[in-house]
Length: 304
Length: 310
Image 1 (cartoon, chains in turn purple, blue):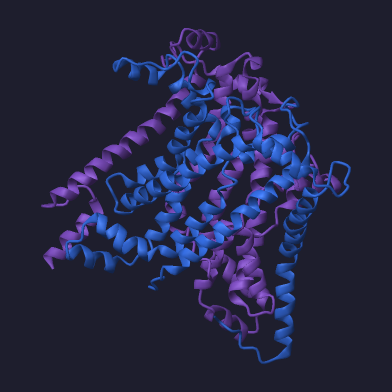
Image 2: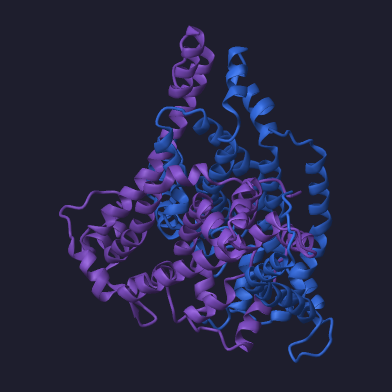
């Protein structure tokens, strides 16, 4: 009993298990490596903040003199004001970039997830003729390395008159099921008991009630974890926006665009200030929900 | 497999109606934006710029593949393979090992978990900027190298075809583990504690615990991810656009090459895209056809390993 208690304790602390020198050395060594890695990330973050508060002229001078890592002599908070008032990309100002980022992220997160939830639920919980076709086709599409369709896709949205149409384009093209989200939701619905549904059917409820009132709410942990990860990647994605919606730049694509002609901005620290503002929402959301994300991300095998 | 016990035909009809309702939008979207797009890419590969049936794209492909000049397909393929090798044989295994130590609750594991996910959170724009500052001439790396009597070449690593791709590869090692750690980590979290406690009582070493207990138990997840890693070979682009917006210094990858062709008249205009969607489609088609047997083989291999139910 005592022995068992000890082990429980050791699992909790990880580092320093009494009497197991080899393991302690291993964990200590890994701990040092992890710390070094964390430091590089931390440093990146600090450098960004440091630059965002540097005086514009001093910044140019320091870069020219090859001393990029010296602390600012005085903190210039006005850079953040400049970011809001001066920074623009393709006639969209900073506020516009934020607004575009918000709707783009919302659409890119919600629409594919909804499509995947519908298909994953139908395929995992119902017996219908096309069930195996759906599953097979989605897995096939995922594992066959298809590339080079960008041209055809561009042609299609041009033909449909959706090119550069902002939210309309994203709303129309985002309901395609597949990918990691499908696998996670499929594994999730597969493991949910059908008894809840039977209870509803006995009470005279229908399939819509089961899906929207019982199953989807139960899937909130999995859906939430997926929404967070997909949302972060949508918030940070710039390629698709540049390609298909060039006049609707988001923060990520707009800041990427600005970075290509940075000297033109005249105040480079203001650009760093804008970068810093753009990562705050993501940081806050992730740090708040990181525990939930990690525990709800389960992908199963492909065999179904 | 749960079967709905349907006795009344009314319920059956409602079920059909329900299925049609929730599947309609995803199905139509898939038919248009996946199936039609792929079909039209396939036909485009066999058409010239005027829309006539022609094999010109395959000739262009062959020319670009063998051309020693400029940003050609052969070079892009070579670079893509490098990115994939780094992803599959360095980032993936390292991520599994990191996930294991986080799972074993190494001290401050919650903090480290966030730090390892940082590359996903901080946009590439930020990290590339910092990385540039570190490896530039007279930067941090330079001061470290000076201690050993060496220095960063005055033109910088990124402005030399011989070192540019390697410099970006090292960047992708630095930033590449985040999502894999999350997926593998949450699979590990589902391994029954009792199994691990029993192993620990028997004095099982961490290495043995990882390779002989945990990895076999999470094999369904792991095999899916291995397969997707192989599938993504062709689409692994690397952060080329952030480092070398025109793919200069021989840094282009396949997906970057494609992006460049399609993006011809976009925001920067001068990127030199050919706007030849046919060539893009033909290139994609060729690599897909070559790679499909490899994927099927890998899938067959991963299914050879028995799955443990628990």
